Length: 445
Length: 68
Image (cartoon, rainbow over all chains, first blue to last red; front, side, top):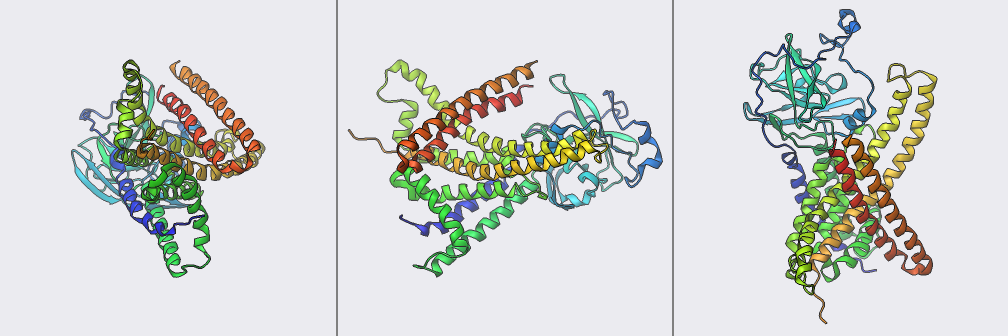
């Protein structure tokens, strides 16, 4: 086996590039500005159901340690919404029971740039804050903005939360969170209109460039990869000609596998040029996949976030497009050797193919990782479904369900471990095959 | 109503992808049985082909997510 391990140090530079691209990814997920400035009466909410209005919640005795805010109405346990909430991004990093504040970098057209730690908003129960600063509040781990200029811009408390039902563009009822401050109810804007769902983006009144927990995890994994590969590269220099040991033995089989099974067969004679890129992709995705599986640590899910896989696919698209030779582009736009009328069909299909390739790369990684996490969340939710919507978890049914959900969850996590490797491999092998097609030299007959 | 239709469509796409990936798997097993020395190449190509088919099914599923 021809081992070319001198390429390991070359992995570092593309990793840095990838890191730069990924850290800038929040910019992709927020666009636009909401022109719906509501300067009218906020006491007259059009929606029917608003603040918590259950009888037992209005009793002061029931407030307990929830401060001055009334008990937030939970409603019926929604397993789907819970699962989506747990795989979504957040402005708070959670390690076990600890909630670690993260830096928020926010921009709104009215107030300009605001930079502060999310701890300033007071991280409480369910990662919901009780303070507001510059009109920003923390609700279920996410920064939201009070879209109203009459709201005080200094650090104010206490801020409570409720919700109201609002009709969206298609006439569906949508739960919109509201902030309650000094008896007045204010509408809240999420950092994206799809908050709590899988996809970022959408039009709101502010842009969020924060170091969210996904970005934090990516930075951590980037530093880890940098450390790992510099350590391995150093030991190759130090122990030249000797058998590998320690970390070398961990990395070498995987590295050689990607080199011999992916890079060489697909890229032909030019494999050395693209090896650092392929290795960076593989190890970065693998690290993120595995890190996203650790329960209770970070709870972040970077490769299950479509913005992350979007940026990874964009990088692949750019590399393929800039590597493409004349032969490749000729086959895209003007396929030689077929009649002209076939070309009129073939060219649009090939041009669509240019964009469908990175699109499926993006969706495949995102959907595989997301699906695994959702299934685990739903298995855990079984406990609460059988425990009467979370009201009583100490029933026989709930205990039985917890045994089942632990076993099923363990089984799913074992499968996800396989999927983590498989999807990193698939992403790399497909990228290699796309690049291979783009750099292939014409056959001479 | 459109949501139900979208879910049915996603299910149909998954059936198609399942048949496709099943075919790949069965043919790959036959090929490995016939030529055990080529197992590495066959496995890599099998995964590649399965991933390409999966891509088509994923597009259908994501579309079903958006049609509500």
